[in-house]
Amino acid sequence: MVDFTGIKTPFYLYDLDLLRETVSRASKEAGKYGYFIHYAIKANYDPVISGAIRDHGLGVDCVSGNEVRKSLEFGFSERVIVFAGVGKTDEEIKLALDKDIFCLNCESVEELKVIEELAGRSGRTARVALRVNPAVEAETHRHISTGMDENKFGISLPHLQTALDLCSGSEHLEFTGLHFHIGSQITSLEPYRRLCRRVNRIWEQYDISKRGGYILNLGGGFGIDYNDPGRNSIPDFKPFFRLFSENLQLPEGIDVRFELGRSLVGQCGKIVTSVLYVKEGIDKKFVITDAGMTELMRPSLYQAVHKIINISSSGNPETYDVAGPVCESTDIFARDAVLPATSRGDLLQILSCGAYAESMTLNFNLRDKPGKLYIAGGDLMPAGDLPGEDYHKKAMHSR
Ligand SMILES: *Cc1c(COP(=O)(O)O)cnc(C)c1O
Image 1 (cartoon, helix red, strand yellow):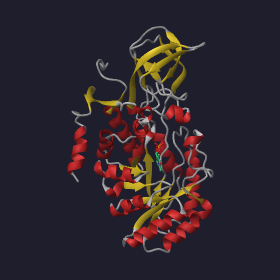
Image 2: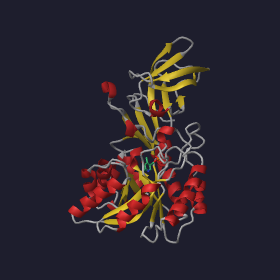
Image 3: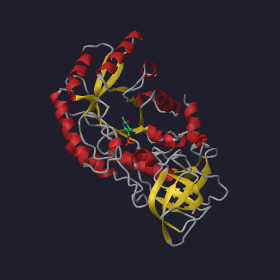
Image 4: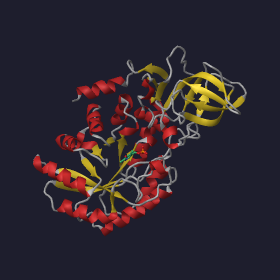
């Protein structure tokens, strides 16, 4: 057991051994079918984590110009960067063109026109894939579903033909293929099976191969087990990738890609937090921690539930609401959580915080920036003297 005495809380704790195991498992399973994975870097921008993923040979999926910049800084090659987003600014599009990234995943006819104009003005050809909204229900929380008619993402089918014709008619656009991403934290394979059927039909109906399309990017969204991260510390990538190999019916030679975020990094991170107070309410006890929604926004943003453990106490189980210190009523990590009898000074761990925790930190209440530690080779290491930290330095050198 790692000793945390004397370390200022709250802090993120990243297990690099688990990360490497997870990424290599995902690569291996995807590799069986020749699929390529882009890391959805919005899940976690940590340089050591991103560096480890880069070293495994993955590409990166960005949703802002600054993510493109950051990815280049981390040493990802421009040839493996794709860039999606419904609201790319002119500056962001110009950056993508200047850096000559692999592909812009375009989300509307109007955006396509802007990309064309900007590419034309700088005498370039923009490689684009069209992000299609396939109207497929992702069976996840409605706030993280993205592939339905009412979602703002992607080009809806009635407009796809127009977008395709725009591509064919322009010398400044190079059409590469189609992009889909139906949502996040998807724990059943059924939505992906439906997506495959949709994709097969669209590919054929719109003659994507004849139009020069050779990239099929299926996005990400594969979920992790928040209830039992100990048992399922690595998502089961095998049936996930096999499903696509069994259900996609495409012409030979299509380059199939995925954009995984949460499933790669979600389980490798935790938040370690101290109990400040245990407060008696009416029919309730509150455990007040020094971490709050500023360090982990998911519970207040979309009722996400993270498993919490007390690593200081082995007392009899009691029921608590675990809450942060931030001045918002939604700053609650768990309601009616069962923990061993908990008291001031105990250390809690909030599990499965590798994705969408640190990358979503808030400045609200002018809170201190949380600390960060890594576990590598079973040892606890600060960011500074981590072997992985030279991932970052190496990245800077190679540029
Ligand atoms: C967020 C996002 C992903 C990754 O989603 P996960 O649920 O973390 O796998 C992939 N593609 C796009 C376009 C995204 O916006």
